[in-house]
Amino acid sequence: MEKILLWLFLVLGVILLSISIKKAPLKDWLLCFLTAAYFTTFLGDLIAKYHLLSYPVQLFSKFQSSVLYEYLLLPLMGLYYYQTTYHKGVVDWCWQALAYSSVLTAFEIILEQNTDLIHYINWHWSYSMVSQFLFLLLVRWLMWLINDVARKREDGKRS
Image (cartoon, rainbow, N blue to C red; front, side):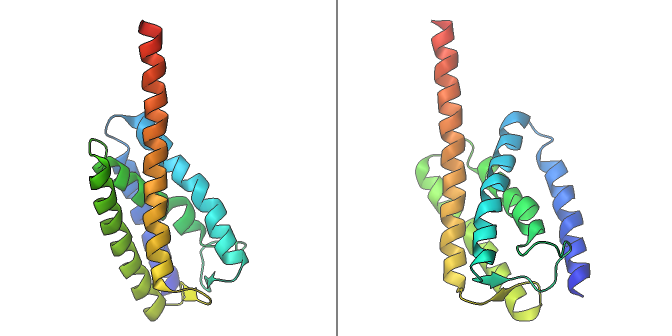
């Protein structure tokens, strides 16, 4: 059952990713997705290495961490979060990050309690909530910073 769920998540993730990057500005969407995947790689590896979480059933069993979650699903949620906050202010960033991290955490709790996809060892759902909230804000802030620097450079070239 768990392997079927993982394959379903993979297919759904690829479909959602292909849909989400079809809109402009493609450069921003790809940069956001890849930035999120970059950071989740290190963070997920640390969490698995220190035995805070385990992933008993995986598509790619050579890894301790959940490659599907770290390289596709969480970066995809980061991308959707960035797209929905693209023209919003900081207060909206926080509210939406709270909403996204709440939904992700609720889904994680359901998976932890009902499947062998994830097991909490030295972990609590509140750690997931806070870490996802901060992660979304970090990626959003980095994207704002990158765009701000690029905008200032463009303005400097025009002057």
